[in-house]
Amino acid sequence: MRETLVLNASFEPLSTVSLRRAVVLVMQDKAVVEQEHAGLRIRAASIDMAVPQIIRLCRYVRVPFRQRAPWSRRGVLIRDRHRCAYCGRRATTVDHVLPRAQGGPDSWLNTVAACADDNHRKADRTPEEAGMRLLTQPFEPTPADALLLALRVRDQTGMPDWLAVPAA
Image (cartoon, rainbow, N blue to C red; front, side, top):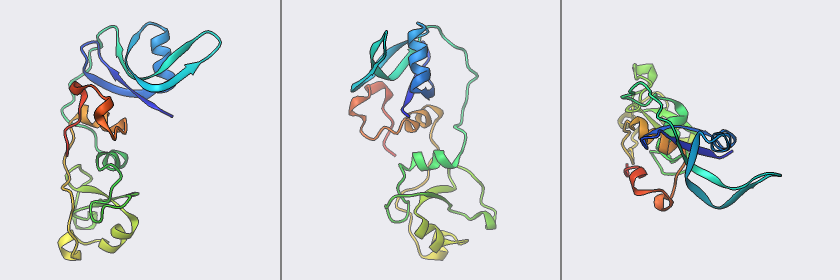
């Protein structure tokens, strides 16, 4: 199912919602469509509308300031775009740079996406101990970047400039 980015009335990214929830918010006049998926439409007995990619709430919603994006395995895979940090192939697991067995935490800076083969080969060792090199260094995304990455945007040409995710 498609995810839709929800912006506050002030254009700040708030969250992602399912396509169904996005359509309901637009139909109830609680949100307006800021950007649509090109060529995709939703048709029903009483409506015919483009599939929303980004919606903006009509009323401002006050949310507590969040300085850090919450860590999750899914978030690490999305941040690294499902590419193994050791070989560049498709990643399906998360590897701890400093293994948990050696006291490594579950954090953005200690985890990378990895393919099952490299994760198994590295085992409970650091990359240096295993003779492996990281192709990309782990980084901590901002909460706004984490939301945009969750949309799985591969080609940002269709996104407005003000929503661009910096190249990592």
